[in-house]
Length: 293
Image (tube, rainbow, N blue to C red; front, side, top):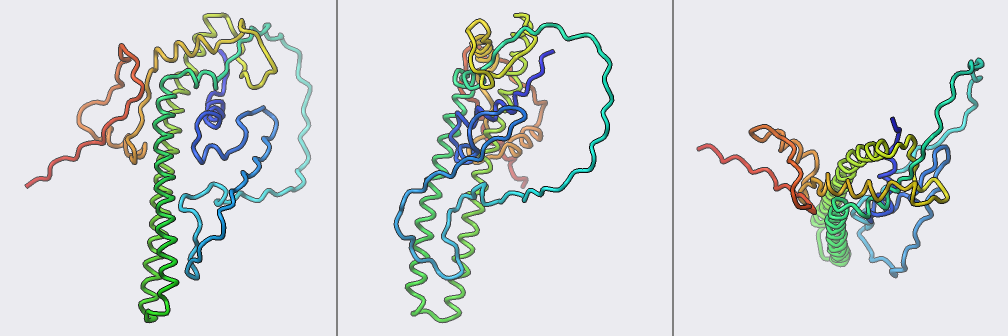
């Protein structure tokens, strides 16, 4: 049996291939067991000039929450208790000689029709999210400037009411765009989980058919030859058995889609593989039952 960790590898491939704002900021796309990944250097910020003045007590930062804003737990360094004594281990039979195969998950993702279709769709959703957030930031900035400019003309109770409305709109905008970002990230993970499951099963079968007993990630070795590379064969079978993935409709969370399918009448069965490759499967939102009179 070949032991592999496709979930970690697919997550690395996502950082290389999928340009979501949240994924692209997670650092270099490689992983070596037993070593710590270097911290990603902050990207240089373009000079946008002086920021417009906002009313006192109200922030004028981005609407989409950044992962860095959540903070990291402080690491403590304390002396460990004494390590227990480890007895000598009796000699036993050596494992058989390994027959090695090499697998490049990033190359497979580039060749996967299912992943590329989902990559294109989710990339468009993420771009639309950023465009809408920029428009809302401009609107909030103009609203804040108007509030500052008109403070002298308003009564104290009017000022408090306008400031309360402005604060409520900022909070609602942050909640709305944060929710949209979370939905896109969950959809991306849902796509990776579907491909990850099939990719591991296909790799197992290809390795067994070629007598391979040890599959290594291509990013962990310096070089190899085509005779050891399982990637082309695995990618070809993957496109045949999984030409498409299930992707929630835009704005619908994965949990809502799954719960809606579970509550639909009739049994839920997995669709059989189509004769022709289907680039993307986007189920329509569940229809609402007509109201009873």
